[in-house]
Each structure stands twice: as C-alpha cells, then as structure tokens.
Image (cartoon, rainbow, N blue to C red):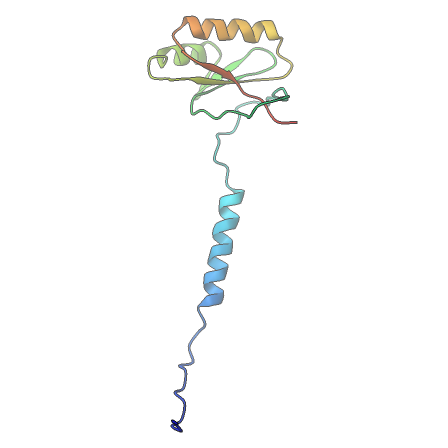
Length: 127
C-alpha cells in the first residue's frame, strides 16, 4: 500500500466552461447567419403541394409587377445578364411572386429556354 501524500492539482483557471461558451457562440452564429442571398424586393412565392424545394446557385427573381432581378441587374439588364451566362449555367432557379400570372411565368421560362438555359426550376415554399 502506498501511504504517500496525494499529488496536489494545480489550481488554474478551468478551461472547460470557456470551451462550452465558445461552442455555444459558434452554434448561435451558425444558426443566426443567412446563407442565401436576400431578395432584392418582396417576393411571395407560391406554396408547394408536393416535392422538395430546390437549391441552385443561379437565382432569378420575378416581382408581382413583372420586374426581374438577377445577380445585381434589374429588369431588361437582368434578362441580358442571364442570357449572357447561359453557356456557363447548368440550370437556373426562378423565384416568382405568387401573384404573377402563370402565363407570364411560362412565357419567361420559354424565353429562357430559347436563350440557351437548359433547365429552369420554379422555386416555392413549403406550406
């Protein structure tokens, strides 16, 4: 049996609570940050009945009054910017306001497909 006195622990600052705080802050900032770009104007997308919302890097916005926005360009400049990048884009996501008539959305999709965009996906929100 060993009856020698027990070794004393060094009294220093405990680091475990600081690590916990750092991880909690990391989680907070990850959850509160915004990864997707903000819409340049208010867009109320239609609700999806089935399927999953798609995610694509190229995103074209369409307002209720027919305005377009793509990567900083508005209206006709937006359409020109999309068509200029058509060869580089595998697909394009369209986020149209729920109040845009379906015939206008269909006409825009047809115009994009005629301009060389291979795939156009209409994005919406889940109910």
